[in-house]
Image (cartoon, rainbow, N blue to C red; front, top):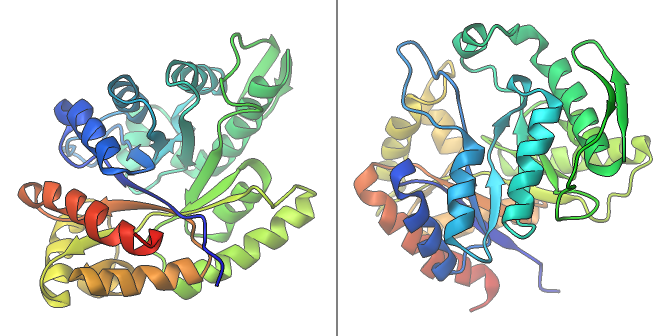
Length: 314
């Protein structure tokens, strides 16, 4: 079997004040990506949250090689000129290391209300924003009249370091997100997926990209697995369910959801489960560590020293 080109990363896990030190350590451990996500008001009263791009800027200044992934930017909150400028500035400052992961949000309608946004318009706002951002990154001057945004003779200078622009990975779970990835994205970043659902999404997006008349050959197939490494699958599932239960609002038995979609248990079990996603088409794996704070450094080290080397044949 031919060796696959696989890339691995992990999200910020140690708190905003430790962003620089975690980024340096992850680069030393050989990770390809460091990621940071965001919310503006996660619930009411809100849980602690930060904005992704400032955190990635701190990580950029502390490192030289690791790629910086937003996982994800809440796109409906941004004017396209502002998002294009923020992202291109980070791309230039980091030497061309940004991958812009985007999504629509919606888990916490209160944050949309706080920003004066209609949560029901988050999909259409995101589509327009991504359309304009790509134009601003690749055209000398942009004029645009849409439902949500209007620009007249707008130019962005300097352009991003990466040409034609930083990769845009679209996150999500449903067909609307897949269509967004096919039309505006350069990659796909689903979460809470089974291997079969991931395989199905690869087939759907491949067909959608063909319909759009775009080249699929350089499309990047990302995956955002939650991981909990403990001696048994049962213990790992309980820990992950507790860690994630306050972050995501899903009906039914959340423990069963965790069992179906997360990487759980000892290293060997996590490797076996991850192999199923790789067989389904995932190539850029960005782990979200799901455990108490005191175990997160251990997880970062174990992933880097035991799980990633398995897939790299080291």
